Length: 264
Image (cartoon, rainbow, N blue to C red; front, side):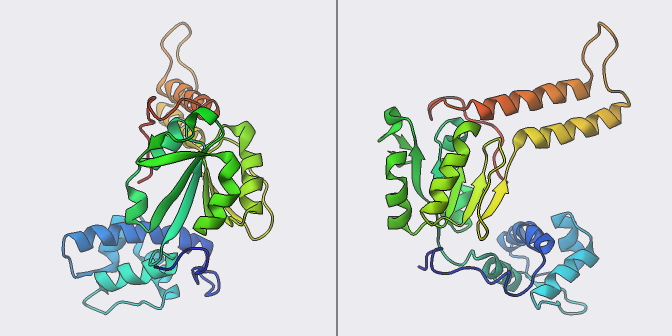
């Protein structure tokens, strides 16, 4: 099977907008569910509803793929699954390294959705010498001293950073210098990378703070009554702060508590 280092997806060269690219995984998830139920075709309205977008936007997105469906019939589910998987580069093997095997890194290593979507966890890496050799999700953790060798020997082009914020930029620099060109960053900090390197940031505390904003709007007030219990928004903000602190100080090993929030 081809590796990620030698085969890059053609999405950019074909001029597909980034907003469309961001929605393709949503369509793929909805289509995969239909395929598992042996549904042969789906209308744009049905698929749009399942993916959480409007049908006009869906048809526009699919036009970039050269797929227009058939009037009165809809879209062929299996063909769309293949077409979107090909555009996203999921018809090939993408070896991934996860750096930082605290609570969050261990949870990511144990997440079963990577393999089913074309991503193979090639290595788990941590700076703590006591972690070296310990099995997590059936993979022995390796020390950061081996990072460059691991990336080269496995042909890795995608790295996942799950370290505390203070270590993230140094880890990022080493990943990039070793040849990694795409990074998924779970550390609560902004990374600086050179041109040609893509970074996607996942910040659980920010997402919770956004939810706190919406809860506050729904409640119609910013704070609870003086001396009373905190409002829903106050509780949500407290949870957000706790999440940020937990990620920032995440150093408990794989036997510790595993975060409940996982990728879909």
